[in-house]
Length: 147
Ligand SMILES: [Cu+2]
Image (cartoon, rainbow, N blue to C red; front, side, top):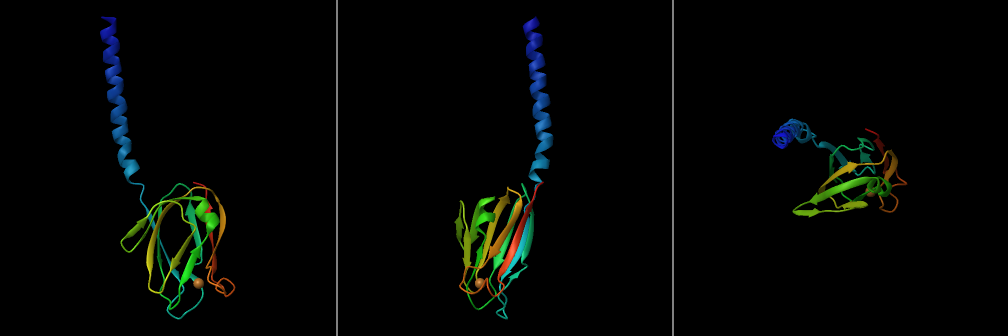
């Protein structure tokens, strides 16, 4: 008799736990991906990032939409930021690249998407690796703040 009671109690506990899990699921599903756009240069050929300052919150998911509207190729290089983040994927055209990345090169007219979760707080430098571009002002910074 005692054993049966214990079993019933266990069953109730399991039900309560599964119900509370079900309640927390919509909360998990609503953690949206924040989209952020960045242009590498512009059609006038200015050597800048638009914008050149980024603020991300650690633990949140972001999709960085990169494009290059300029007549020359550019890089989005921020090794330390990439090291401080978890990259889910980089998508460009029909190709999806998974795993760590440090640098993205965009040819004129190119577009790419970088999906990542910043993890480690700090301020990280961003630059374009094309010779002379960072000297001309193609630099920026990326701030990851704690949750
Ligand atoms: Cu450049």
